[in-house]
Length: 428
Image 1: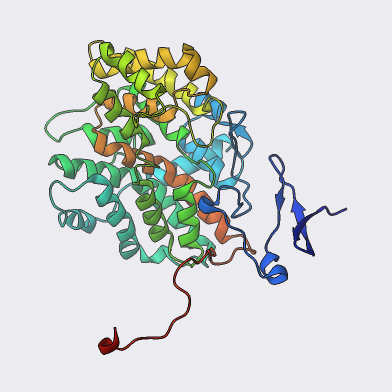
Image 2: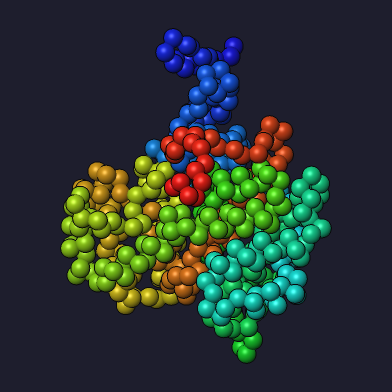
């Protein structure tokens, strides 16, 4: 038996179908609200509106739950690797050993980019921000790989998916190398996905580079934790761009541009800047007092989360990973890390933070970890984009294959001038 809800407007009552997901809150289908009432809903930020139906990721912010295809993020990060999570997000099930080997093989052998792309990079200023380079270069992939831009062809969609996931670390490493003035390092097929990326970032042609397996595993875990996060701003951007029929490379470039915003992908950078502002452990009490003062504009970055009203499930794994990296590198005298460790201790025990559930989030720990690994702040969001690419592609693929999808067209509440007649210049 179908369930309906009611929308009452004056003396008019409109019945709306109620839809239930496999888990999570039900939704009222308001698709026919305008045709029946002449009214739209008003929901800035779409925080109470489901823009699509999806089988990929589920989040329960109140309970601190994040599931990919039903699997808890904690289990995926603890037991699997990034490419396994990629396969899961794309195809809905964990791969068998043969499927995993085949998937890894195909990704590995798509990591090189067209040699003319290197010339494309030389068009940027030498001090160009890596995210600016990523937005432009990923969009430009459609000019180099135009044999996989026909979204109506399932095989071309598969090829585009493999290419984007495989080439993203190569391009991210090139953006980094270009920014610091070092030569590009080609990928190696005998290395795993994350080890390959570390080598392309930190190796130089004049000496051998050996990948630290602890750091590689830590970065791989960071990639898993950032792989997808439901209908966030950048994912919604990718879906909206894709709804027009744009090619996948352009859609991912749009997602990267959205991610660049400081309120989205720049949160870990903001957390690190806050640690720099605090400066030393001795200054922490002063800043804690400022954070508790409602009249003080200062805010602790990297604490709490818009979605998670409980502890961010990714933060628990990220905290463990952070301490593993610091221990492996033997970093003990970095004042910023000293500040971070003490802030973490306070946030987990101070009554004010516990009561308001202002726990350290993933951005707090990831910024510290990436800094310790040697990445500059300007690369933080690039690494986020690299990891999130598979989520974007999975969401784009799901949207393209959904027969009910249509071009995105949000409505508005117009508050401008009413209709008026043009006044000639001499009469104004």
